[in-house]
Length: 171
Image (cartoon, rainbow, N blue to C red):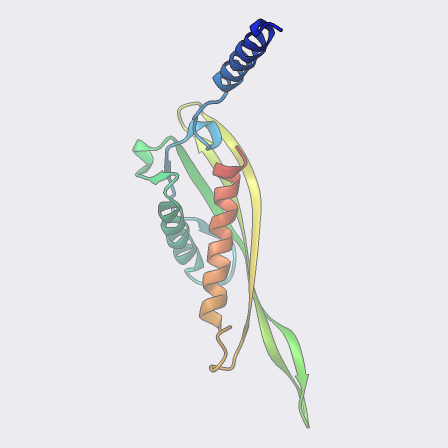
């Protein structure tokens, strides 16, 4: 038996592997190949004072920490993340029955933002009015690790993850 068919099969297999790898690229994982993003302060459509400042700051820090996009000034950016804080709710979530009254045992903090990503070079929105919601639960008891500050940090992280998913991972 000749080794010629084996050599032909190996050659064809090698050629197929080379061709299939030619289609693989290392292009950006971001919407519209964005590398630099600006994040102006969000607007606040809630009655919670200054919440937009804290949320915008946490989003900027979260995007910078992710290190996929570089946060820059609007004049240097490939895209601008525009946003509004639509809801900020802090409501009782579970209750306990005391001897004389019912009182809240656990609270739920919920924040909802609406974001749009604008490309100034193309003068178009890459995505528009994307609603991102996040919530965190906490107890008023100070001995519990699940406190207000931890719930708030969890909410901020979920908001950042939602923005990154829309801007980076969905593409």
